[in-house]
Amino acid sequence: MADLSQNKPGLEPRKGLFGSKAPVPEPAPANRLTEDMTSLAARLKISEERYNELRKKLLLIEQNMISNHKKAMNEVKMLDSDIAELHNKLNLMEERMILIVKELKLTAKKEDVDVMKKYVELWNPMRFATKDQVEKMIKESLSKKESLEKE
Image 1 (cartoon, rainbow, N blue to C red):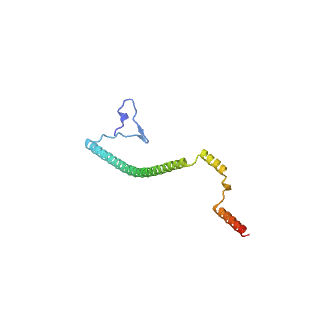
Image 2 (cartoon, rainbow, N blue to C red; image 1 turned 30 degrees about the horizontal axis):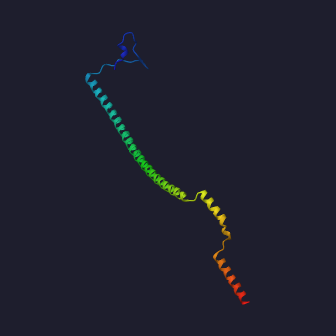
C-alpha cells in the first residue's frame, strides 16, 4: 500500500527505521480481489471461532443455571417440608396448651382451698379414730366387761 502522507502536499513522507520506504506499487485489481477474499475468509474464520467459543460458554452457563435451579428447587422442597413439620408441631403444641388450660380450669381456686382448710381445721380429723382402733377399743371394753362380770 502506498504511504498516505505522500499524497498530502506539504508533508514529508514517513521514514522507516532504515530510511524512507520505497513506494509500493498499487496491486492489480485481480490481486486486490484475492487479498480481499483472503482477508474476508480469515475474518469469517475468526468470527466462526468466536461464535463457537461463545456457544460453548453459553452452553456451560445454561448447564450451570440448570444445576443451580435443581439445587434451589431441592432447597425449596426441603424448606417446604420443614415448614410443614413446624406447622404440625405448632398445631400439636396449641392442642396441648388448650388441654392444659381446660385442666387448669378444673383445678381448685385459692378461695376453694381456703374454704376446705377452714373445714378441716373445724373438724380436726386428727381426733378421728381408725376402724382398727375402734375395733380394738370395743374388744378391750368387752374384755373388761367380761372380766368385771366374772368377778
